[in-house]
Image 1 (cartoon, rainbow, N blue to C red):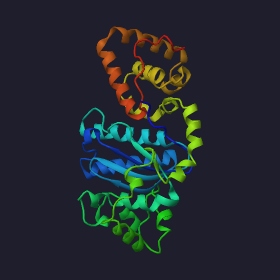
Image 2 (image 1 turned 60 degrees about the vertical axis):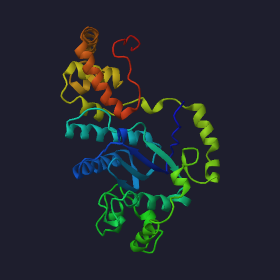
Image 3 (image 1 turned 90 degrees about the vertical axis):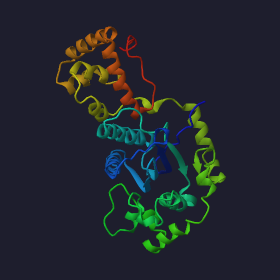
Image 4 (image 1 turned 30 degrees about the vertical axis):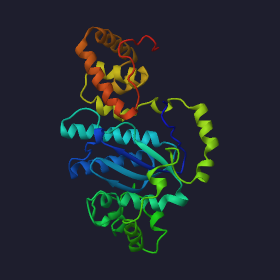
Length: 311
């Protein structure tokens, strides 16, 4: 069964959330939450994304975010990947941290922006983690009410601008404690929209166009800094091979990155492929590296031995 398409365009609003693998915790301490927010800050700056509301729970998180460019998939792959790498490194663990593919629902900002912001800020209350939403330290509500300057990635004025004061917004949030969560938030239309049917209808032609033209274009290029972080302590031959075979970098680019000639890089890669076919431990090591890269890219690993199709 094909995965739901991501609808990506400039100025889109999304409700995004992701849970831990097997519903396990993705934050084991406050230091982990700080680590995640640092990764969020870095990723928002890199991909020009605005966070309107967020909440970090124990085994999942929620965002109400806006993309200035059609790049939600790249943004989320980078964020989840870089946090997984750093979390695993901190806790000396390996393996997947997040469960499957993150969820992302396109939001009708005119009708559901406020409701979704309230829903996100009430998550700790609904989960029984606090009685007062403003006392929970790991949601954006605390920053909404603060006089201090918010972090660069948090854009709270769009929502606060619809209320007379911060206190009025807080009261709006608290008014939702004893109310039912809107059905459109609990069960997005078509599994894709926090919106009315009329809103969805306006995207029908866009969806059909996406379906007819859809390819696995999300996975074509791995950011160089991700590759460099994963391969930081590896030998030059392995480093060059991964950049070429998995990272799809040209031999000229690899020569520049490794301060070698293009001819030397070509010989390194050829020799490494020969070793790879003969050395089971080396093949296992490469598979482990590819597994780490897959956290970012959400694709099946390419063949590690048969590279005859590369030119």
